[in-house]
Length: 379
Image 1: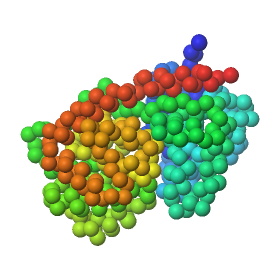
Image 2: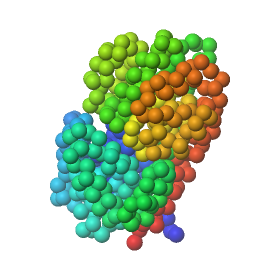
Image 3: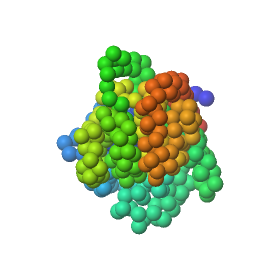
Image 4: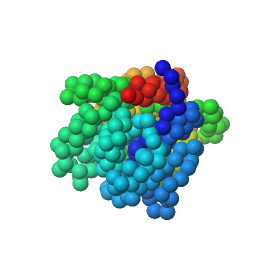
């Protein structure tokens, strides 16, 4: 196969600055593909003060008229706008990352032109309808998820758990299991805290402060854990619609002085936070394949996840590199935290296991596989 450079349109309401894992994913994907000589352009949302068009890392970014709904930026382009951009960029293939108005508009225009289109299945319909505003539309969204994905040339599925579920459905589009990858520069040294500098046992969460992340479970568990380790710290990084609610819950639980909300932090500035924590916790009730878990592996940290995460067993060998707990049981999570805090050697061995496991998520090999899907999708 003659692998000539391609013109690839990446469609994602979240891009830069990334507010979600998908935004981080699309940033690193775009940069890597551009570095391989492909022409990459992004169609995304536009926030206040951002230019309509810009160039970053040899990636052309088009920011479209936008509204903000329940903490998410939603691009609202007209088909005329999109026809103009696609006529200028002359893409060989379109790669979608969200089911949204933007995706539907681009899909329609690209279909008119006869372009191959693929999609990455980052979200189940459950995730998309967790916000209360969206719950009445669950059946409609489920229908649209299947309808649009069945019109794609190929469907990328990051998680083996999700792949197994999709194989039981009416999805007819060819499915390709291609994992998410390490999104940090793998050539840079991982920062590490000085072994001679004492620090309190630190738990880290990174993600959107939203209902599906189940952060309330983590707060209740942390309150219990503090009875065994009163100087422990919980670091929460991210923004979202529940921040104020979670801060109030900390106050009611009496743990505010031990919980630190750092808000939004640029992805490239996250390494010190991973390096300084002792354990990473993702308490989600709905999750496909989390990028932050891959990052925690990369930084050699034990990980605690819930059994509700579809990819939990892909990441965690219970007791070997972390623990899988019930998403409703704060006592179980607190007990696992006590186990790790009281056994430094266990934390170290789990971290070393995860550092080795992270090699399975090297970006080059994974993006090679994605690139192959692009070429095989061409007419």
